[in-house]
Every structure is written in C-alpha cells, then in structure tokens.
Image 1: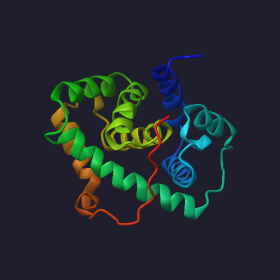
Image 2: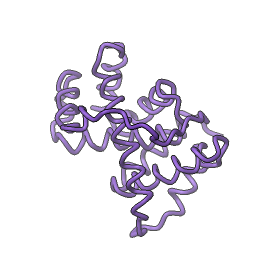
Image 3: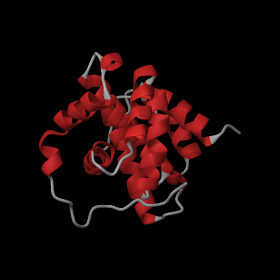
Image 4: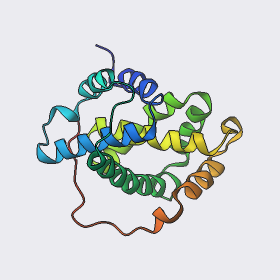
Length: 180
C-alpha cells in the first residue's frame, strides 16, 4: 500500500479534475456522515478514492449536500487563510507551499491537507477536499502562478475570500472531527 502522502497526491490529481460543485457535494456528504458517526467509512482516504472513482460525470448534485459542503468549505477556507497568512503559520511552511504551488497543484494539496487535518482536527478525507478547493480557487484566480510569491498568494486568497472573511462563526455548524 502506498504511503498516505502518495495516496493524497494521487487523490489530489483526481480531484483537481472535478468541478467545485462536485467537490463541495462530496464534502457535504462526508461531513454529514462523519458528524453522525466519527468512525464512519467516510473518514478514510480509501473511501474517498473509491467514491471519486464511482462518481459518474454529470452526477446530479443533491442541493442539501452541496449547501452543507459549501458552508463547511467557506468556514474552513477563512480559518485556513488566517492560519496560513496570519502570524500562526511558519514562513518556511508558507514558502514550501508556494514552491509546491508553483511546481504542481497536486503537490500543494498533498502538503496542505495534513496541515489542515491536524490544525482543525478534521478527518484527512475532509482536509484533502478542502485543500483541493483552496488550491483550485487560487489557481483560478491567477494565470501567473509561477510568478506568485507568498505575499501575492495571500493577497489573491484574501481577495477571493471577499466578504466571507468577515463572517461570524456559525453556532450549530456540523462538526466532523475524526482523523483518519
């Protein structure tokens, strides 16, 4: 069996080909399943890989799954920005992410996902989806990824957050906090 970093890298390659709506729906499904049962199959990377392989193109999204995934992503996207671009995150780690971001998006996802999982105490399968959505957002915001610096990455990210950055924490938000 491949190492979990190799597994994340392979999953990231698959997920970067999916549209954001599909990723957010998958995120919503997993958040719901894990919040009901912290030991749920949905917490594992293997189940994420199987589900992505089994999801047909043109899959009709359940609006409830999409909305839950979208809300969960927005909340973690803000927290991720504050972690990565704020004082809490080591400049060396941000530089490492930037280097991976320049070289290959799936490598950036593979670096970011375990950080998000440990910092936010969420299942690795959730953090891989969130990291993929973050990298997709940053990639779509700039065509000059290769010339981006850590400062411009944070500026681009902040711009993409827009009004979301000022959103208050939601009480009663689903919690999916099982590490796999």
